[in-house]
Amino acid sequence: MIDIQGVAFVLWGRWGDGGVIAKTVGISGMEVIEPEPWETVIINGYTAEKTAIGYKFGCAEISSLILTRARDLLLLSYCDLSSNRKIKSIKVGAGNFSLDDLQKLV
Image 1 (cartoon, rainbow, N blue to C red):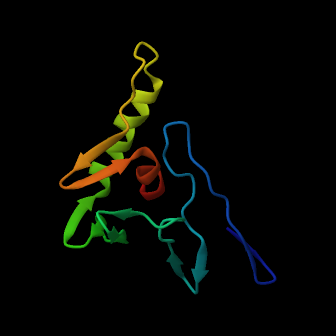
Image 2 (cartoon, helix red, strand yellow):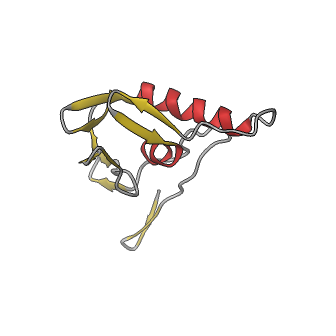
């Protein structure tokens, strides 16, 4: 991030494997402030809340590792050209996560 005259510039994107290139959107003193998901993700009526290990949806807590693995599985499904059907979502607990939801979270 470059801060010029109070205007913040943020580089944001993803590597080829889907990993986030940059998450920092602001700096307050020496403390790095990380954003919530760019867009709100709602699963089973609960808005995603960032936690130390992943996300919380109501009382359900899901680690980033599980969400990353679910996203990777969906991405592999879209790369499989031998099938004419793709996995549309993955159920974790009682929540259905689409590829779009997962890419917003991890």
